[in-house]
Image (cartoon, rainbow, N blue to C red; front, side, top):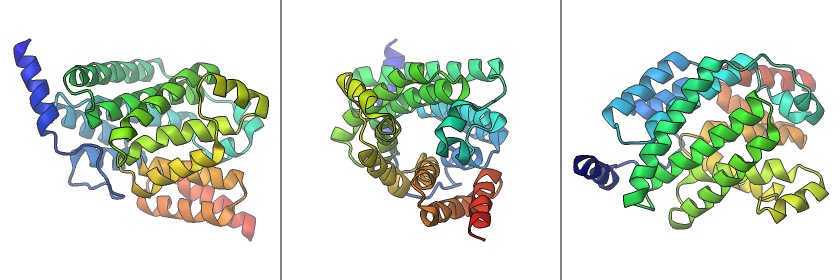
Length: 280
């Protein structure tokens, strides 16, 4: 036990990259490379990169968190849930027909999240304001919320995870306001819940949920401009928000940038082409 504690303390004190800042996912970093591959739909390669990171830094919870994200995005791709038109039209999104969740992927995702939470909790016992550990916990809650809502269509069940992610992200940002990836959790909570009818928003506020759509967009913009691992995802969500608000030029600009950066992902090109056809 003493050896484990010393290793955790050493990791907590020497980990160099806590909530990295910057718009570029560098292929020179194994973890960054994995995220580039994930956004490029190269899921097998992304898993290899994340698992290699986990072997190199066995006490970093971001390794299994990132591996869980790759399982989730692979399910998104298989089921087609990230097509922007589904988010633009609420009725179409609610009535969408998708395949059944893959139980093997579900188990692998949950195992990775459990492992990450265990590592993060161990670090936080000795370093309660450790940014990487807190960010991993925020992302884990967000991944669970996204899986429940977008894969299993259990929107109400996902709400508690979304709210907890937002609360924990705000706690992290109090002492580390430059952890720009964490703003996405706050932004998603406010934006998505801000779209609900007024009486529902009132009830949600009673339970402490953020329901300010404009505030949510501002937080998403911070991640889209200055985030790191979640920067591409934040830009996709902003493109969706722009489409909902009929800000087509802004949506085209965001989708064009994503299509150029991630050429192996047809989602961005497909939605961009749809917008171009609309203008022709």
